[in-house]
Image 1: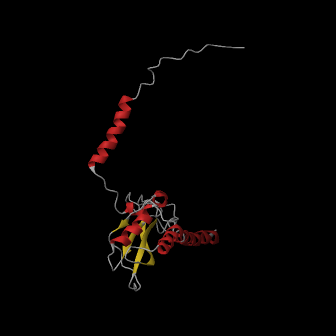
Image 2: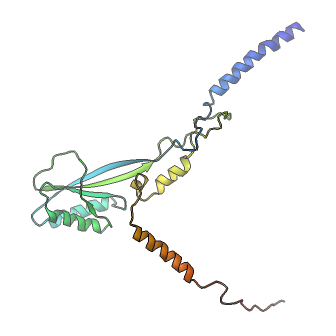
Length: 216
């Protein structure tokens, strides 16, 4: 009997040690006690440059073709920002680039970002600034413990909706600063919807349809 009792007493510390090691290997418990997601979209900007030769009339035809081919290769799209670095400040150069960018529904912005590399005389630099959005650290399954004494959200909380938002937003810059508009445009848009709703003919104004009962 005494031998059996000693075995039971010795098994208790071993069981406690095994449980503690098991919990330590589960990655701990969640710690975020707020309803805010710790995983937020991050917007990154990349600059792509192309140097073109210029003349008094703007861009030669061959340079216009080369620039347009570059726009096609870059898959120029909504959200891209186009700028020109032109030491000569020739308005004809800006006009030529703006005409080519207009084919893709874009306009040339005034201020170009700083880029590396020396710009030779008689040349201008066209810069495409492209933004991308992603959510670093997602998915996050680091907290593997079933215990949650702090009633906290999981480390991956918000990964799904924020990753989808970052993938679907047409212009990632909108995640940093939304589009601005005038109150006149907003009022006109809302009034149009309200007027359409008010002037719509009621669905029951035509009366009930006559239906003949039939059978076999």
